[in-house]
Image (cartoon, rainbow, N blue to C red; front, side, top):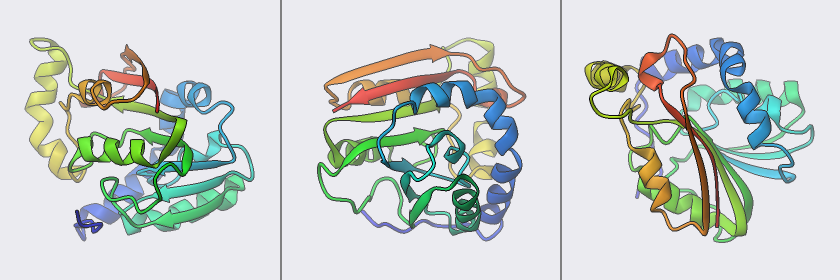
Length: 212
């Protein structure tokens, strides 16, 4: 699979600006969960879809971060965040489905609100599992498909097309829970919850981890 990302000249820069502007607000929404999930992380982290670096505030100073981020308009903000939070940053302009890291080379992989957007989420999870060492941990926070015939399901289905276009491929109704459960990890822990915000299409969410 190609490691290229078809970047839209309008949406790419706009999304980079939006995600940076929302960093503080997203911290208020997801900060406690991220702090808990990332606690006791190792010295090196691989992050899929690192965006503008909003997760760096939860990593220890001096952490080595390998950031998989195909949107080059995010990279300047990534570097700024790394400097601010004292993170040793290495950016790879790759999609999550085509990570160039060796097999069994990583202890800790992070994905937050990313599997909704990748073109082939099953392949992305396969790549995560491939690069993890035995007993390595994949931690995630994702918004997922709502239960059928509920208000959130209706909202997701109505807004899916414009949301998908504007946020460069984000699926409001992807069944990421099932994808992770059937991915072949030795152990999977998933909590379903509703973190309410004005962004109704991304309710409900899951959080948890999978161990290789």
